[in-house]
Amino acid sequence: ETGVTQTPRHLVMGMTNKKSLKCEQHLGHNAMYWYKQSAKKPLELMFVYNFKEQTENNSVPSRFSPECPNSSHLFLHLHTLQPEDSALYLCASSPGRNSYEQYFGPGTRLTVT
Amino acid sequence: GENVEQHPSTLSVQEGDSAVIKCTYSDSASNYFPWYKQELGKGPQLIIDIRSNVGEKKDQRIAVTLNKTAKHFSLHITETQPEDSAVYFCAASLTNTGNQFYFGTGTSLTVIP
Image 1 (cartoon, each protein chain N blue to C red):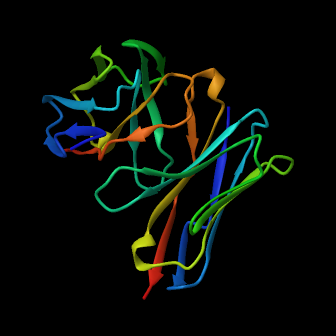
Image 2: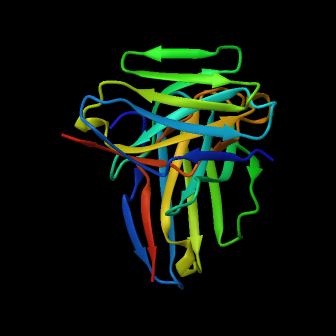
């Protein structure tokens, strides 16, 4: 795959589990984003990283923990999630924090049981 | 903050007809308006965008219009084809404050063969 890739594509986890979502962009971009997509709701921005530094945290609960080791990789570490956290988690990238276009990956469909 | 409203939530058209999706935004400072298409099982794909210094932009069968005074913008798809069936999202952003996108709730377009 080219562009923005995400793994795994599907994840089922219990409320006591710890898991991680991975995103990789092959576009040479410097900014990366995590979004949550729930049914009937607008996409919600969770975190923004620019040149590996977190620049936005939109009041996301601490059970979601992002990590950006370099400009190409972004992780979302999950622990003690709730059933209402079940959603499609989308990663996106853009050339820079103030750039126009954002390019999305295919998402990870998360189900919390 | 910015508030984006999108209508209609569902739209069915006959193949060959035109489809129009409308969005309004609240922050007159927003300066970038992308449209995304999301097919089942995939992430949103950027299909067209418009910046605030332009009133209209066209790319083959797709066009976007922007009315800054009224704070609304629209997506026009002409000569619709079954492969246009998808969920379409509009967004608004102010790029010089970190490029946070505010998304509409989506329009599910069905093109009937």
